[in-house]
Amino acid sequence: MDIRIRSLYKYYGDKRVLEDFSATFREKSSVCLMGPSGCGKTTLLGILMGLVKYDAGLVEGVPPRKSAVFQEDRLCEDFTAAENIRLVTGKRAPEAVIAEQLSLLGLGASLSIPVREYSGGMKRRVAIARAMLAGGDIYFLDEPFKGLDAENRRKAAEYIREHTVGKTLVAVTHDEAEAALLGGEIIKMGGSV
Image (tube, rainbow, N blue to C red):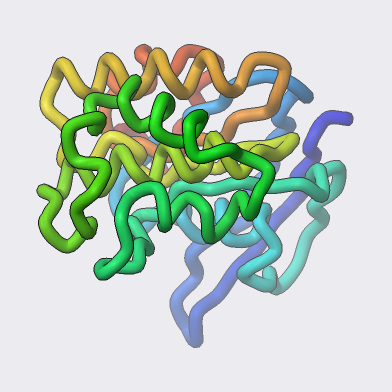
């Protein structure tokens, strides 16, 4: 089922973040939301995830099983990468699978250390692996490549594309090159990018 958004409004006090926003995200497709800071991209993701209430409009067709990479990595700093993933997967993902997935993202040599010792880019890759292994019918990615160099950005994009085949993907980025890595439709919000 497609996700349909019609005449969506969201205010934070007197500040209007979304005004009469409408879009359709086709089922099992990729969409990249682009636009200047403050135009409502992250707020829209929050609404679609059911974490933010909107003031007016209609949102329908969002699949119930959701997975996300938030703007912040939201990791437990004293846990290893695998332990952070295990928090959301439970026993669904065996240790060997988690280790393999982290290795695919270039983290194989760092599996036994707490993530507080990781660089920002390493933490970001853990957050990506966690979202992909958590599974879902729709994936929300908010600036998924933040802190990644060009090579790790390319690897992470390939990893995301492989894990979201046949799923709906909604990503936020400021970078057209990153949107191109993920593929799919680009929706520009809040004027020109």
